[in-house]
Length: 219
Image (cartoon, rainbow, N blue to C red; front, side):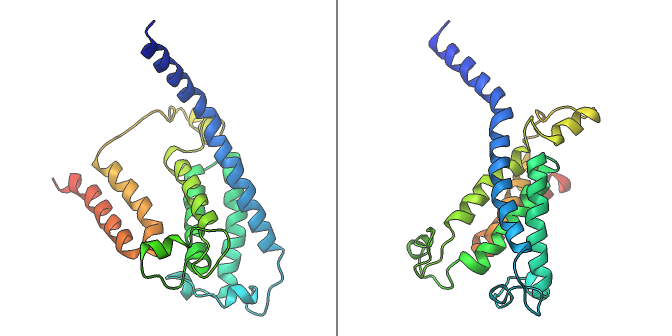
């Protein structure tokens, strides 16, 4: 057997075993982080607004700024707990991961993103754990990057999603449709955080995503 054949066999086995391992690892770490954060919020003392004063005084982006502070607080707290539990079970994994992506994006915008920045170099100084005047979005950004594989690839073999597919005889997760709408869907997902963080990039991705999905329908 050639060395390249041995390597290809090795990587093929790693891909097969990885379907069991890496999604579970990502789900477990995201469950631990969001479950802890949600439970802390649920146990926190709130003011007359139904939210802690530090939260009630924050400025949120549209459409969350239209909602009462108490409602936003409960949406975040219960959302983190519920979606974290879904990740643990591997149930509706893509929906749960996308919902947590939105929650994390809003957290970055309202808490961790610098109020003002004049260059990408200055913005990059906010990639930190401690805020030294440039923001501190490092940890939530890493959370977003961890959630993306779960959105695109699902919960893996050790998940209730896989069990439900088998029960309903819908086949496995091996089916792939690599067409223009698939690219458009990916662009729309990536557009969500960018619309809030870097609007120019976000709306460009949004437009390209809509066009990619629409072209096959009108041609």
